[in-house]
Length: 118
Image 1 (cartoon, rainbow, N blue to C red):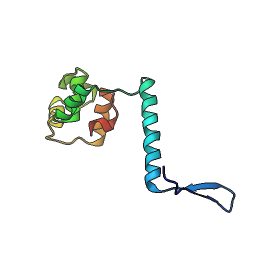
Image 2: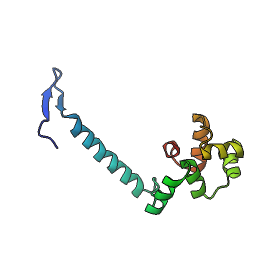
Image 3: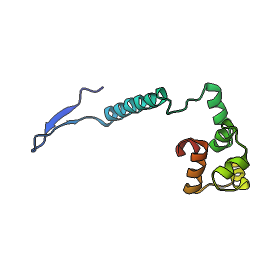
Image 4: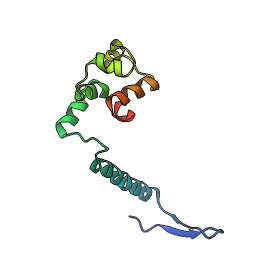
């Protein structure tokens, strides 16, 4: 951490700290990591092994990886997400981009955060 933190008091008596952006970003990273670890320990976040991460990176799209990880067929996922199997196939191959609504339904069906499909 930087020693450049300054403290000021507002006219209303509130004490504030002013710190460099790099220090703030470091604190936010630390807080975010702590929150993520808490979710993982509570069973609320899913972790991937190194092999699974490599598989995710090799997949045509994150959607293709998560569907296979959940052991769902394209047709089954389409039914759960209220779309069609050809639509899922096009999304998985990257041929089409899904609307926010469709991708949100797919994320719910796969039980992953929407960001996991981006």
